Length: 445
Image (cartoon, rainbow, N blue to C red; front, top):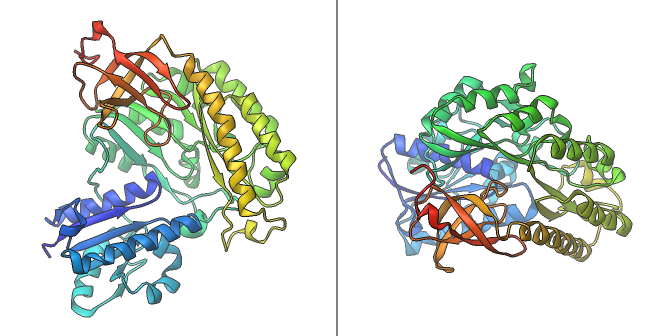
């Protein structure tokens, strides 16, 4: 098969890595990959199934893609990822627009399933792959790459489908990860991801997260390492010390907390409690100078009262997080929380999300205002054509999930670092210019 392939990848950065493995397999077979769906003969829709809204978006993408059978060159649609992994039994008979269905670990089944589809018709190949870690074709900017270190999840949060979709936590072999990191080439920022990065190795009998960070830091092609999805109860003193002392580790932690109030945390199946969270935040800020902490919270969990919602807003003011994401609780079948009494009305959930964002916006605006007049090291991610300037990030900003630094310069190159003088701050973004002594040159020249 020498077809032209296109891909629509939805969902999280972990899903992105799965999609990159499929792209790598396509490239290995010598097939061309296009960004123009109208030119694609085979379209892969890499789906998300975490929430109802994500499932709706995934199905809509398949339906939209199907329109290119008439207005493009499309011959086949491959539906892959979390949606068929969990719902193939119900989905395959109903979503007839899809020609081939694959699960999350079925890279090796892609071409055999397509050959069958061209010869015989629709194919459900979910679970037919060998589950190996195939080489990736990176889809991010050259200077920023993700390294997915594990799949599945140990944590049994009562609202979450991930264990039902991806199974129990499985750490990828360390040597395989090191070899993959080497194969990524020169990388300014390597972002470690998993459903829970901090439990790396525990399924093999010993937590090896810090050891993995140390070994990745020894690679010459890796300049900086960012840690996402670090669960609070597994952030050990050894990990804190590594973040503090390792010059390659960015002083930034993403710590999903989901709520602040003990009753809700218990109903969620979360292991940490408010005082433990407070103690952890206090320790992190005492031990690691300038540490940036990001987190996420769920609004409108079943039986959440207005008092508990207000307490969460008060906790935001107390904790002073650098960055936060807020989500309305999504009632998912096949999760324990689905059966809980006291389901909150959708309009109430939306209002609570808005109030949380307003509260955090004020905190973020105050924090960012403190940078006005100072100089920050900023990595350039490219050009913002609408603003007619360059765009990048300081250390306290993760790609796509936090704010940005917009700056002017005589010239700037993607992937280079610059000293940017901050002139203005908004709720989530900073604005400035490259310092004259920087001369528009990157910091390494």
